[in-house]
Image 1 (cartoon, rainbow, N blue to C red):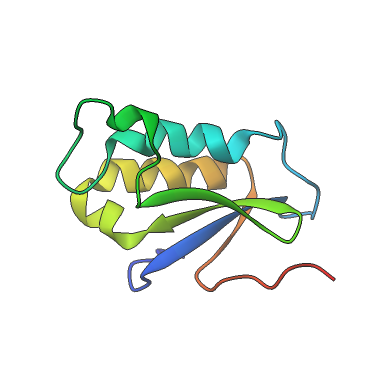
Image 2 (tube, rainbow, N blue to C red):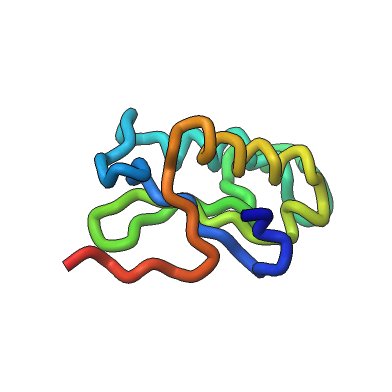
Length: 102
């Protein structure tokens, strides 16, 4: 799926087989790498905050990263990096907010 028509995508910390992805801080690491991509470009100290276009969070007890389509518009290679990270690690990706597991 190309995810070109969605406002944001959710990369879940679950593999396609449903197993939790490790290391446990993967979402923070991915968002940290993306911290330089932000509205107005990198600024002094901006590496200390997550970009509003790539936010680590949790849905229920599952880590995830929300990647906003503005990242694609700003720097397509950064967008591709996030999608390829998910693909290479066989992570679940959704264009709608997943429901927390019951």
